Image (cartoon, rainbow, N blue to C red; front, side, top):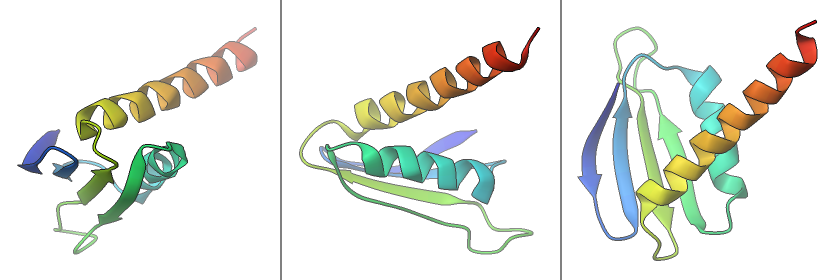
Length: 87
């Protein structure tokens, strides 16, 4: 579940409930590969009770567009992998 904490013209701060380093590290990687990303980082304040936070700053582009594109890219890679391993 996503909760937008702050949203500006070129930045977003989210709480990403129910996720951990596995997904957030992958998302951070895809976001960092986008030329529109200026800064991306995530933090999990406490591994047992902390809510993961993601911060994304862009070069003036709507950060939701960049976030959406990164998630679409991740989904495409996963779908391709599934096609390759299914008989």
